[in-house]
Length: 418
Image 1 (spheres, one colour):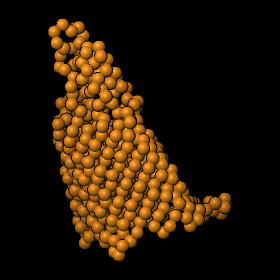
Image 2 (cartoon, rainbow, N blue to C red):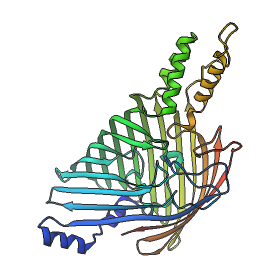
Image 3 (spheres, helix red, strand yellow):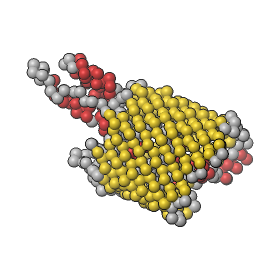
């Protein structure tokens, strides 16, 4: 489902609410719309949990509701022909164990001309093909966005400003969006990722049933409230100075995530033509911290048969480069007895880093699913994923000894908008 259809769906007001507000207060009417997903998710594995990006827990061999379920509400107030206000809230399970509410959008929009507009406040970060509606299940073919791609950036929105420009050239519509700002987002484990000096550029073109986009974002990222990471950095520096291993001090500087440069570049294409539905994205992530450099991509294809849409997807996440563990396995003869155990502990801590970072771990996923639009503004989806971790635990969480995969994940979801 493209952006124009989504915009139409979310524009449906609760007419009684809007008219009542106007009649009793004199303020412009407020249009309220919403979306949600009620889902059950399970796997065939009890030694690891399948979760969406940034969730602290997920589904194992028992049915869970919290992986794919959410509820969102949006309020829009149009003041005049050039000024409007929008706020959107989302309830879901994210970085914490329980359901929580978050303010995803809160901005004022000024229409400068027919082609140019500006938004100020909390706006979506335009880094993916479906950035603005990734959480609106009804607006997407698949039950969930591929984690291999959508785990690679920890920020969904920014606090700042964005400029949007759109112009038609014959049968082609070209649009560009430039976003500037910063954000502090919670991560699993009661820690936070901070993005400063975020700059994101998204350019897209629509021609008939085709949409093409290219984007690039950069920021200075920090993760400075992780107890385990700070303990590891302190240990590396202390051991490097105390036992005269200068490479440990260098390693600590490489690992530390404090105002480190991070870049994310992506390409995308979507098509809905003659009942054939295609969507694909390709992305590269590069950072100067312990967070791995990665390549991610997916390809989804489906064919609409009346109200039914069966689909297949393949997704891949590959680590291009990672921090080299330069901690020696042992100390030379003559060193204090505590030296070797200290190095072994530090080396183990460095090896565990891929499991504590953002979007770490290699894996591929093959997906088959079916979407059934059986009623107005309601769709039922059934999806089965075969997830194959590589060189570790992939994107699974709360992993127990002996886990290696592959894992079959099943889910049933009811998506709706109102």
